[in-house]
Amino acid sequence: MSRLALPGILDVLRVDDATQIDALAADPRFDRRYVPRGPLINRMVLRRIRRVLAIDGVPLPPVAPRGAERPLPAQAATEAWLDGLAEAGIAGDDVEALAAWVRGAGDGPVGELAQQAVGRLFAADYRADRASWAAARVMGAAPSDFNPLRMLLWGLTRRVERARDLLAEKVGGDATGVHATGVAIHNIVSGLEAMRAQWSNREARERLSVSAAVAKAIVAPRQVVRQPTVAGSTAAGAFTPDTLVLLRLETANRADPGYDTAFMDGAWSECPARRWVPALLAAVWRRAQAQAGTGAR
Ligand code: HEM
Figure: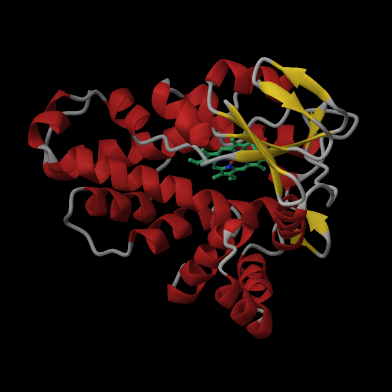
């Protein structure tokens, strides 16, 4: 935990501990309203989230305010739908291609392969290509990239807007689909890269069970942002309404690996894909074993 406050410039409270993250995530004093206020960099970050991660001014679900009711009916419906798909079994050409890539036998680039596997949740004929993967890279970087030259260029060329429009068009305007294929996809790709590294170690791949291989491939978001609605303090430190609270999931998860922190299980904002993502990764690992003719465990 640490608070970094430079008057007029920056005010953040960084939380790295999984137990404190759980407590903060459940605390109603912290929300995702992202009202631009506080010192300069705080306002820039808040404006950026609202500008990039929205469609027609409506925030994408993972950056939407808490609201009066949680889980939202849409959040619960998404989770039920994804759970049904996971229970039915995840298979098909995309899984075969990802499994081959994990074994080092297939054609990359993995970003496009993974984006297509996720995109097909939202559009049966989804085809990822170089342009859609480039758009995902822009969406992944834009909320936290403050390189002034790049920002100028991206502003002049409307790069972020065009990236978001392309991703939205491919999923019929579905906001969860834009998030999944443009933002969350980077965590899945990092997980697949971790899986490929495991596979390349013969001893590790023969020793690991499917669930152990999947657990090592769950990559948490680097951080999620909360904005206090009042001043106060927690075990993680003191804050004011101007403080940005950074729940650093990746660091917390590395110290205490598991699914709970990575998907914020049990929180009002918990990820509706928290069982589907592990099911996809398990399907990929099993297919890699089957393709290689090694036993499944
Ligand atoms: C490795 C992959 C993924 C990880 C680690 C992950 C993690 C998370 C986390 C931590 C949150 C909470 C964000 C916050 O409270 O600020 C979240 C929210 C969300 N995730 Fe995921 N996610 C992943 C993939 C996906 C995918 C593939 C989808 C869609 C198919 C998805 C859909 C959502 C949605 C809709 C929310 C917003 C829930 C709400 O507040 O209503 N996620 N995810």
